[in-house]
Length: 264
Image (cartoon, rainbow, N blue to C red; front, side, top):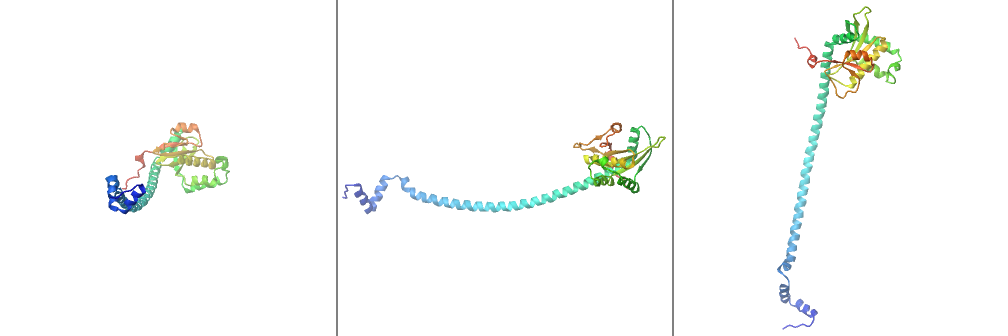
């Protein structure tokens, strides 16, 4: 029988006798503690496998997202092209509606002239659309003027450009003893905006400065934009009384009247 007197002697005995060491271990330790090293090794192995599978999943997911990003890039390009097409279509449609507005305005040019003549207390005798020769005479006469007296610091290039691109200019003769005359500068738009008011008023002031004859600004269209801040007057009598060179008279053109005549 093996005996010992100190702890050190007992440990030496255990070290020299594996079977005794195993028996003491089983007696002292619980089953859970005994299995702990093996369980930890298995846990470490499963954790490593999980990390590897997670890494592979992340790499695969990133590749999938790269493919999705590429498809979205292609979608963005297609949407950009569609937006560009829509903008071109809107621009073309605006030009088409502008042409319709001009068609309706030309149809009612005599009524526009008559409306202003009546507001001035006269009747209409004659209404003429100025041609290039008439417009050239006015333009030449304006070249000898100091337009800054009328337009301040607005560049002459912009003033002449507004006149040269005016939609419609009328010369009206009133049916009275003096056969008085006046001009009408008309801008035609489907929807009236500030630039229409500004241009019509500028052309009217230009004509009046060049000819010494009264000229009135008219904007003709189906609607007035809610964003308009310029001076637009809807009643012809109020317009004549106001005598504001920065204002324009709105002549409403019905949408149905903007359509061109059907071919025969």
